[in-house]
Structure formats: C-alpha cells, structure tokens
Length: 257
Image (cartoon, rainbow, N blue to C red):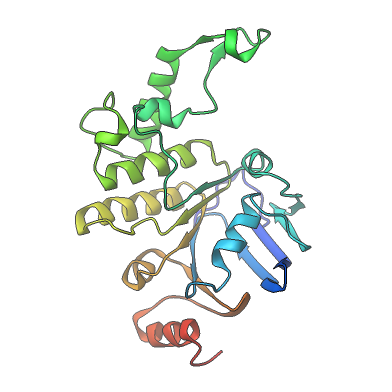
C-alpha cells in the first residue's frame, strides 16, 4: 500500500456501527468498515446484502440512523452528496451519470465549471474553457487514459471509454476515497483490462479505492482486502487469494461465517 507523506496516518475512511432501516427492513446492522490510503478494498455480497445501502450512506445519499463515519479520523455527518464530495469522497455508480451530449472535458467539470468573475452570479460568469480543457488533458494523461477524440461527445464512446471518463471525473476531485459500483459490468475483456489498470493507478497514487464487484477474477487481481456482507452485516474479511476463493464464495452465499 502507498500512503503519501502528506496524508494522515489514520484510515482514509472508517465506518463504525452503521445502522440503517427502511421501515421494517434492517438494511445495515451495525456495520464496521475501514478503507486505507493506497489500497483497493472489495465489497462483496449477493443482491440485498446491504452493499449499495452502505455506499449510499458513505456517499451522502442516505443518512445513517446510528453509527459514525470518519474521514481521516474525523467524524463527518454525511447529510448530502455535496458534503461527501467536500470530504474527498467521489462515487461512480453503474449508470455512470454522464452527459452523453457533452465531451470528456465538459463531463469532468459538470457542476464544477471554472468561471469568472467569482463575484457575479453563476449564470452570468464567463466559462474558462481553455483552462478546463488543459486541466482535463492533464488529468487524463496522469491517469494514462487514452481517448480517440477528446472533443467527441461521450455518447459516441465505447463502454470502456465512458467508464474511464466517469472514473477520471471522480479521481480528479477525490482527495481521499473513490468508490466504484460494478466498474467492469457489461464490459469486454479489453475494456475491463483498461478499467482495472486505472483502478491500480488510483491505488498507486494513494487513493483508497472501494470496489463493489461480482467479478471474482477481478477481485482476486486488484483487491488488497475483501469484506463480505450478508443480510446487512459484515460476515467476514479476507485477503483475496486463489487458495481462499472458495472461502469468500461460501461467505457470500451463506455457507459459513
């Protein structure tokens, strides 16, 4: 794991006693989770295990009923997605939330456009398009993301390229944690390879990367740790290796743990 010298020695993210109900349904039952700088943490479990609810609470989509979320040792009340983003947490969901009619630069800066002068109302400012284009190119180059034409709308891009743009957008603004929900779903072998390499580059830069995935081969390749959830609870944690793959599968389906 790589922890840059300017980052805290505390975990990038710590969730303690997270509990969430939706009516009579207990979606999270006192969940504890730790994600560290410079590691990839896989979050595993069948549908309904509580993974998405946990990620939504970390991302500010839902509020916990009880429990604490800490970012670098400091408790943060995740009352909205904007609060989570301000804390350095960025999330890429399966639908990617891209604007198909806009190019990569416009998607990277959507909602965070650089405009001047600051004292004017936002709708009356001038867009710094040249600066955003240069910044976008630098960010894509840093993450080694190659797009055939950066001026093309993302709706014309392949699935892997769209995923790369979505991840780049998160990586560009996430100072601490990137969360990826099924990042290789519906991608071919080559496109999946590109996304996996991108995740490894995020790790090498010191980000804490949390990946929800059903692709066990990918988990075995990129994850430093795997946490398994079932029925709203954490039922086990393992270092993913070929010799304990069956143990992880058993935890997921309920054979043990």
